[in-house]
Length: 125
Image (cartoon, rainbow, N blue to C red; front, side, top):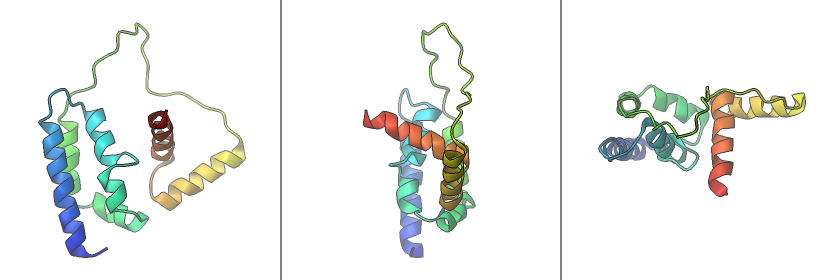
């Protein structure tokens, strides 16, 4: 990817993060999903593992993450049950292996890959 296009893309993502950080009611989860989600600008701009790895080292990435981290937690739903945000799923070893290889090829953790796949599926509904 040309450096000029990357620079422009980074500037656009930073501007989006600034805008999101000033949006009333915006939580860190919402902002994170907008920027890093399956249809987000980071995924569209940095399409290879090498590009994503390089992005993670930029000052813009650090700035964006600081803006996201400064946002409030999402409100607690009225459901009286508490959720830890963790659960175990038993899957076939073959599927586990496929997911691990895909995560490695994408340059993301297995957790990030599965989270993105679940979120994408829920958005389609």
